[in-house]
Image (cartoon, rainbow, N blue to C red; front, side, top):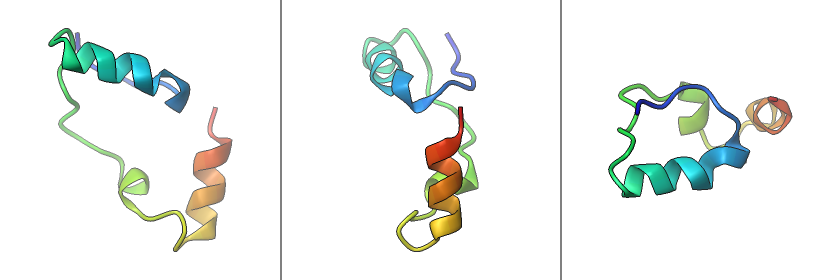
Length: 51
C-alpha cells in the first residue's frame, strides 16, 4: 500500500501500517510539514485548519 493524502487524524493508523510493513513511507514530504510551526504562525494556522 502506498500512502496518499489524508488528515492527521489518521496518523496512528498509517504509522501502524508502516510498522507492519503493509505500507511504504512517502518519498516526498511537504515543505510545510518540515517547518517549525512555532517559528511561523501563518504555517501553524494553515496546518491546524486543513481538512
